[in-house]
Image (cartoon, rainbow, N blue to C red; front, side):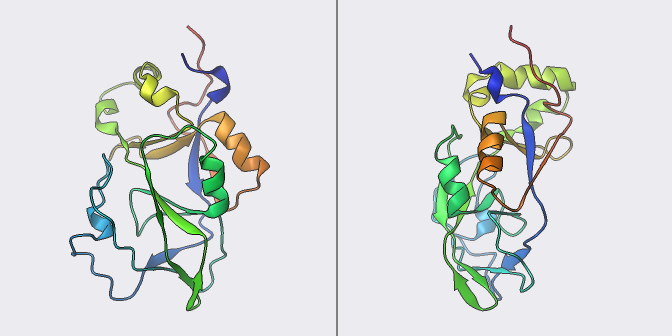
Length: 189
């Protein structure tokens, strides 16, 4: 049974404050490259992050986009502590070496969040997709889900309780949005 307080879900995005790239000379073709991190399951190897370089004009924030390190989130220790107090799907947290203006920055992590197979949702209407997700207790009882689909639902969602914790802690680098999924509270059945 899911809790009404967890809904409506919000889409979680970074606010675009801190762009980054992998270090110069990173070998994307190596056996433990970040490009080999699976989208739909946990990795069976230790990814080589070497280090991530933030843009020299970037501000240090608690959530940064993962364009260079899919699928997951680049987060600060502050954000990690909040996530540890909420219900998450199977995930792995890796310490992430970060540099800003040629200096090492401590306290960043990459959280690998395998995505729920969004392809199962592609041919469904919005209400049908919501019902399918709502009926799966392994999903609906979570506070954070990542739905990956190339066509309609490439989002990371947070429950209302996690959103309130994030806002209360003033976690930076985050923008909440709505999407086609979970725009309205679901009713108890």
